Structure formats: structure tokens, C-alpha cells
Image (cartoon, rainbow, N blue to C red; front, top):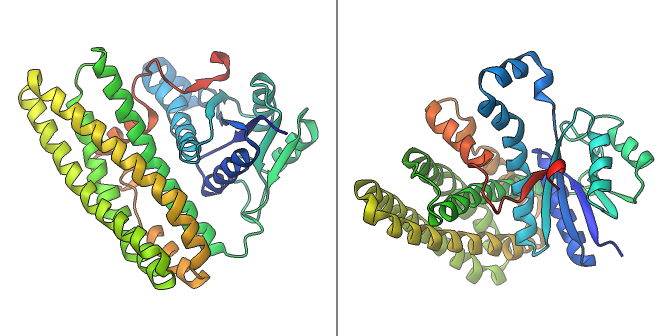
Length: 351
């Protein structure tokens, strides 16, 4: 049976489903995953070439940053699913060639990828790219067609949005964890504006948008359909309130640290570690228990209501009314802080 599976990913909702299905499949066969993202060659454009000369750091962030965010979201799904994973990227304007190269370089014995589907692969693979992988791969290719065959499109859409929001939050948490590890080694100067951007994100998106939509729509409808789910949902609703209190404590700890750098760092580090553990466990509970219960109990009309509600969520990264500094800070969080010794996302040349 398969032992090492390559999963091409991008930042589309279709890819969210492909990652979920790949994790399920890998767990069922006892395989490990390598997620792969082909990065478009930005240097080949006029703007990219100019940026490379003017500001190489910004150029690298543009080229690699989003790839790292996409791949780390996929790795979070594997972590929640308790499947070992790694991540690789390669700069290439020919996705199918990059996928074939990655499968060979990484020693994969299967490629698990999305089909063209009903909506198409608008970003991951366009037109004949999937067929080219099928035709030229030296290892088996398993094409995931479940999204295109979905009998419940509203459920598919809602789950994609919810899981993508979970994974986006997970990437931000991963970056905070990396920063804390760097600080614990004495290798990072406190970046208070960046840390405040992190806390603002937690206040603006999970606390004010994501959790209220879960409580008001997903959890409410699931309670109506399943008495079995009520104790679990009550626990999660309490955790949402507790998370708000924990974020408030993080803000207070950051204020104290900035006011007294010599003594405040320990308090912030402790509060952050406690918060990270709390949220990782919360996300895992929702992914492993709540979403499967909802898939079994909710009707398609329920999912339509959930999908419409979550579809109105505006991620602060893309809200034009938000301060430019805040939006740039969020991209710094998602794109990755300066690389640390435990960095999990590599180019193929670093493999």
C-alpha cells in the first residue's frame, strides 16, 4: 500500500476539500503526506524584475510568503488529522512539470490531486494540466472527484469556508509559536507592532466574526437536529467565551511587557503558550467531532443558511477599510516570520 503521498495545493476552496480528503485517505492507509505548491515565477514579470532589484526582501516575501501560508494551512489539517506531513514549494510556471518533479524528488509513491471538477481548477491547474500529470507521471495518480460529484453543494461550500478559516487561524498561531521559540533562544528583538497585529487579528476575526457565526448558525442548527451534540456544543460555546478572556489577558500581558521589558516577557510567553495549547485543542475538537456530526445531521437547507452566513465574513486581510499597516502586518503573519530552525516549509532545492 502507499506510504508517501504528494498532494498539490493552492489557496482555493477546492484545494481545502482536496487536503481534507487526502488527510482522510492517508490516515486510512497509514501513509505520510507531502504538500506541494507551485509558485508562479514573479521575476518573469516587469513588476517582479523591478522589485527584485529595488527591494529583494519584499520580492522574496511576495514570491514565497503566500506559498508558505498555503502549505502551512495544509499541514495544520494533517496535524489535526494526526497524519505526518511535510511541505515543499517550487517556482514554476508549468504546474504539471513541477508536480512531476516534486513526486520524483520526494520519493512519493502516489499523487493525490483535485480533478477539474464542476467549477474547474481556476488556480491550481488550468485546462490540460491534470491530464498531463495523469499521462506523464511515473507513479499512480489518484484524482479526487468528490467535490464535483457532491450531491450537497451548500454543505461542500460551507465546510470549505469553515475549514479554511480554521487553517488560516492555525497559520497565524504557528507564526506566533515560531516567534516565541525564537525569543526563548534569545535570538529575536521584540517586535511590538507585529505582536499587536497578531492580537488585533484574533480580536477582529475569530472573536468578532468566526466564533459568533459558529454559535449563531452552525451550533444552533446542529442543536435542533441532534440532541447528541448538545453537551459538546455547550462546551465549545463556553470555550469561545473563555478564548475571549484569554485574548484579553494576552493584550494585558503585552502592555505589561512593553512597559517593562525586563520582567514582562515571561508573563507574555506563559500566557501565549497557554493560549496556543487551548486553541489547538479547540480547533481539533471542532474538526474531529463537530464537523462530522454536522455532516451527518444537518440538512441541505441548513447548510445553505450556514454557507450564506460564513460567506459574509470579511477577512481583515482583504477589507479595504482597514488600516494599511494592519493589513500588511497580517500578511507578515501569514507569510511567515524570519525563518527559524524548525521551519517546515522548504523549496525542493532544500530537500
